[in-house]
Image (cartoon, rainbow over all chains, first blue to last red):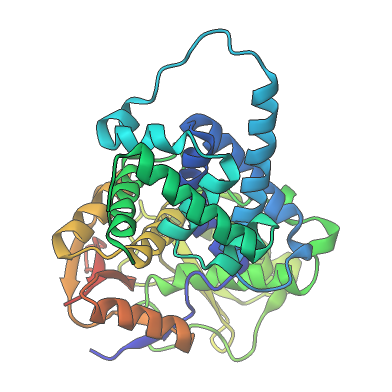
Length: 160
Length: 238
């Protein structure tokens, strides 16, 4: 069969955003610890990315979408911290059925550190790329990752 | 990578995989959002082109879609392309009969008197159509396509397949469940060690090839329709 060379799906800015959207929802779920909130936040980020696309000057659309989504998420988490919870909400069933110890341990990390760990582990972003996404210095990311792993190692009782 | 890093990666991936899928694969690209003044010009034009091209990419490999004609005309018809793209953009799924009426209504106002609409052989009445403009033959070709929801899901599935490494059975199940989540449950899924199509971008094509060489499966960038109009999605892997 002759290989047909087609216009690639995903090279277009908007197609990249569409393809990245489900990933953003999942990353924000882990950062926010709230699947419904993550979807709302991801939709807001998606709309904002389209509205502000003239500010995108090339590079990685997924990273740019992550940048917008994570900043919205951090703002939301700051807002939530100012609120007094009316009652303790239970942990989500899907998390407790999957990796309950890790889910609870991740909650002990600061949101930006949690985000850095997720971007590094799940997406394979380098320290410099994460620094760009989160708007901090590369050294800060390296420090966060090291401290986060030490913390998780202790919380998970991993002695290796 | 240390042993702890490896365990963390596995556990975090497992947790990630357990996250419930979003209720929608991706927000729709609303024209009122993207058509702001700052977006006029090249960007918007490119969006239209890719919209048509992305839909058309799914039919390459059928061998019947364009009857040997150029998929993308040497002489572009930007006004007609834009108008058709706008029609497609406004609907999640435009079926052949409605598409014919709406596209035909564009001809006279845009100065395309004498143009015609042709359905390619396997276009069923109940499928969503993609369109291509054939300048040489003064025709708009309607081809089997997919809804925008399905297209977004295809793109999301491919992004995931490239981000992970799924073997044959896992990839089939992953694609089948992803399509089912947007109501597409009438497609066959085949696998093969040759791609139906690969990206025109060399780097992206190399990325697909390397992924397959690593033992992972990817969507091969196309779909085929049989004579009855039934669709098959193809996964590429070894």
